[in-house]
Image (cartoon, rainbow, N blue to C red; front, top):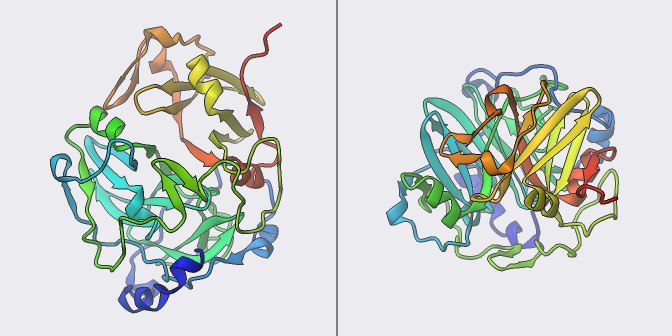
Length: 346
């Protein structure tokens, strides 16, 4: 959604599927929002901006193909979005998704959409029902606005709540995806399949139009500028600083990666609910839980397997989705976020 991508728009539109709502089955399962919606729906609509390419100008991958881990030509430090669902592991290389942003896939017998917004550094998974998600070409707070092909409703990725169309103010069901490195994902899931470059589109998957994550350069550098306006601004951190975010009925929580890594387990109370976030040193990410019984979790007693976190007290916790995001985008969607930077030392 920057000028480098504009020259691909015409070809993309020709190659992409025509978005006829009646041709794409029933809409995704929806429910009242399970996350805070801080701004009004009208405010979100007013803040929408064009990202450059039009609708489907950045084409989703609707017929993904996969290869074995041994066949993949990835470096250990290359970023991937990992999915482990119903016993099936898949990796979606960032260098492919940067050109497509959405993969409509079937994993473990479920119809899922794996989504990635390069402008906000966010990877989220959604259950898509019988339809597919596509890239609208619009942004809000620099974040990808998806549309579902059953109703043409529009959904900001970070929010997961429709801001326009027949399903306005309805929420999507999320599932956990992992923003990590190829080396870490393969070590945890050696049997993983990997999305191939056989996408049906002509792209240079060896070049990222925004910069690089291995090493971090260009747009992804912490102090680089954002490209589009946001609804709220918070300058406590450089714009592209990565935080681990969690949302619940009581509000939003952002944890600095340094605090999560240093402490291993972070406990925060929002309203009347206690949340426990556990650092996974293998994948260098967090596992978020609602902790209704306020169980004390000890990092040294935990282990991490293909199925998640195991150890004393884990069975009493309730999993909550969490994900990494660039600070400027998280703060724009959740300006009243609780920020955790580490325990205060007396």
